[in-house]
Length: 270
Ligand code: OOG
Ligand code: MG
Image 1 (cartoon, rainbow, N blue to C red):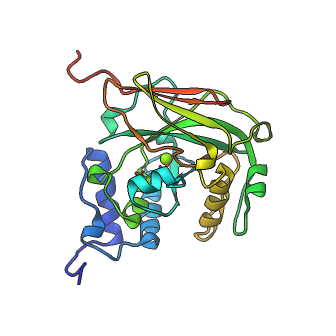
Image 2: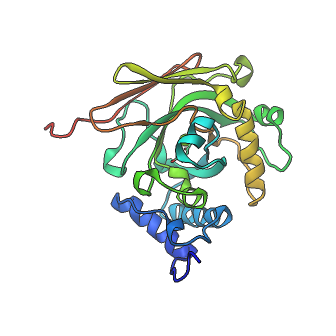
């Protein structure tokens, strides 16, 4: 029998995750000790920590999807898309380096980003209705970070950990959704000048609109809607790349411009 003798509770897991984040400390997944940490429990922990973030003055600005592409699901060994919260503390203005001083082991992934023009509430939302609520589409890059050592986790762990949220950058070109075929929108990921990966929007559940619909429907089961003005990160199109000090990462989109991120000064530089 696993999980016997564990002392973890929703409250203590939530506290430990925020402490790890503040202290830049990683740890083993809680599911090693507590097999009761399922996805539903993970969401309650995620919501508890959203409240803590809001209580300390952060503003809720949107949602992110996790594991919406096969590349991400295979790499992380979790085959389930999920939703997490974005606050203004996670916004990284274009041109700034990866905030190493706040992160444990950042990785970067290219994402198609939506800005919502109107409210979108599930259940029963499909991709056409979802796209109609979008005002602008951007190319973006998410800087993920996990509070679990080596990004090793099960679904309940990563949902509780706000889906490895860290920071995100939105590109400078915003286009109306009807001007693009997002299934065919391509991205090249370049690290230190070499192309290391590529994908199109179809990697994200067939079309990023499916991810948006999924988020609306999923949030509805927990009593939330996607609000007008919110940002939605639709999920990494490719596997994430490492972003250590001294590195330089660029995500080049077909019609949505390029997002450049550098890892900051290399270790040892003055
Ligand atoms: C989980 C977070 C996933 C995405 O876009 O798939 C995510 C992880 O890979 O650590 O943000
Ligand atoms: Mg992501």
